[in-house]
Length: 610
Image 1 (cartoon, rainbow, N blue to C red):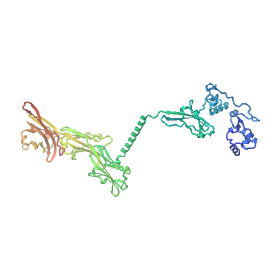
Image 2: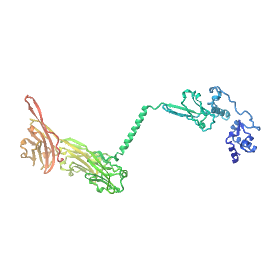
Image 3: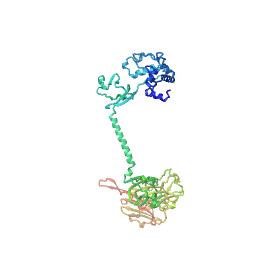
Image 4: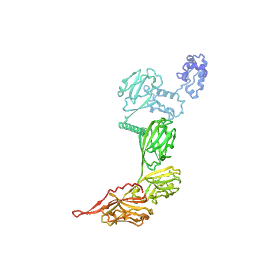
């Protein structure tokens, strides 16, 4: 019957949409009562409708609700008696059942909320139906509100969707204190505890307020001032770090020039050039130095045919970064300090941007005493394997070949004669990565820059490094009265038999001290001051011992000496020495003191490295 649309419409219109609508005063409504409410005239139909509803209810529910007798009266007392207790703890309830939890006390009905009465009524009316049900709790709605001690006010929420009558009374309490009372559309401040006087206010619209709700208020201590200051400082620090990072990252876009420092021997260095300039498709990027073009990028491709030979296969631009204004150039094997210029042109060859990069290559320095062997270091990483066909060349300041290693062996025929039998490299340098060079018998004439270059079979540069060698002047000290003093100079033997050895006094004035030529001394070519006072060992060109012995040294002999070995116009060897004489002088009191005769021992710069 309930599935009939017309019946449903009558029941909905009468407001009978719930089971409670079919009952009144604890019993089922009579057919006459239902006919009056719904407008359905058939009493028998209404009786069958009630029976159909009862038939679909569970047996326990029907037992709890009771059945109507023919006269419409309950057959027996359907509900247990409700006893009143003085206190919750005094009520004897059955353990383990639903009624054993928070059953409200009904001893003083004036202090019991309607919700509590409703909960007890539901429990008692359904006692038989709820028998054996597991324990549960009847919990009140509760909200938590947190605020700081320094807050001006706090709102304690209490809302519902129920429509309340106009005579509703609202009471806010805390423990045993009355916080606020609102009744019959007005405040009742006389009932309010003095602690809350002039501190409370409530919304007068009660349509959304509920009958009862708990609000837990937590008041926290105010945030300490030192902690607030610390947070502010931390925030500023983070802001500074982020700002500094952004400025550092984008600094190249705002700089007009750059300074880059690297060590000689590094595989490559990036010359930065960034700007807020868009490169046209037919634009041009050109890197130059004082000698010409270093790298050219035009019409979407590199133009190696325009670059200087010194930079062949040594430069690269990242094309995918050009559209972002990054025109940086990667330069392989930097060896010299130089200034590079990056220029960006439009299609009409107008300059859109120009920046300079100053590259400083730090060259390692090696200092040694004259006459001692010295090693010019160059060790590469194992991550850079070199082919056996590679060529290693060491050259000096004047681009003279000092040593050549090719095809797994030394090529002494390719080196200059002044370095014959004076250079050596370790075994298998291409495999071990140790490209260092040992130079024997260095003199002040060997002071200068030495460059090690590694080429492939097509003479493309694979590696390059510079090392600066400083050979300190040899200082010889002698006391006046000594029989003789030796000015040492030892080098490799087997020098050309036609070579000439000349010793000269060159500072503060120039005098010829000793000449060895055509396998014999030449006293006629020496200054008369030194005649009969100088000598050299036998066969100096063959033994390599070019030392000079000076007899009867005096204070006048103090100064700078130079020894040169020449073959025709070719300078084979050269060495500078400084002789410092000390003489004894007796003053008027008879005391004897030492007096040094000396000249600034700063080495003279050689015109040619030998």
